[in-house]
Length: 340
Image 1 (spheres, rainbow, N blue to C red):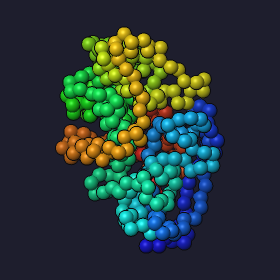
Image 2: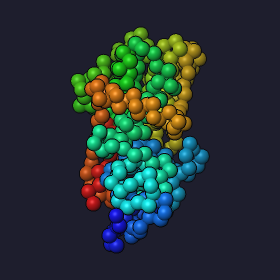
Image 3: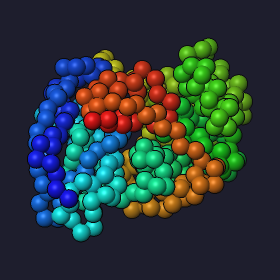
Image 4: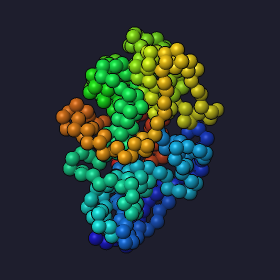
């Protein structure tokens, strides 16, 4: 298959490093023609772009677990789409794939880091969520870093988000008591009524420390944190002997202009002989297959459900859609489905 000569690639590039919440000045919208792939390469027409809180960190300069997006580069993003031109024997035209393709309409690749997926098994958005990096983050964070044991008490912050809702469901599969922390009564109701959480706490209402104490009177074995700040402090205060705190993210801190706020209740780790550990899902790359196989089985059995918050629009809608994460407007995995 050959590409039409007038095929255009629309892109969103990082124009400036933001201070606080990314605004319009942080982005450049560009376009360029799409050429035929060289030998050993292929072109993907992107249909779904993953939006993740980690993107805010990638926009900052400085040392981190991954190199920052450079000024002028296409914004880094996981994405899914269909191969529309190929000179690669292992990636034929018509194959659906996922990879770190960036915020653009088309991407060219040599296949490294690209995963072939079956769009007949699940929607492409699910391969960016429960069967993608989101689900893998929940799986390895809970089972490996959190060292979860059957029947324990688990509290997860950001519980209505992409990783948080998956963590809670996985913990329920293992027979645990699961308490979610989320923002707003509708999200809390969703966690309990639809996902089967044992309790949900609206952090916007009342005292978060008292709320966790009431929901987990015997303490917390695993606190899976996606939020940071005062929510992390409240979780630290309720740890049981030998408890584990899993540091997955800190969305409450990413846009803080005065610098991040660290935990004040860290002495709970000493008193309770507990531990707090951060992790990066990329470190488990050699085991992705085992995790996806197990989660796909749970999906097929109905024990695990995928919740994709799909926003339909164009590549140009990426900056505004990204902000939904920081306003807490998404429930489940936020994905931009490209209409152009």
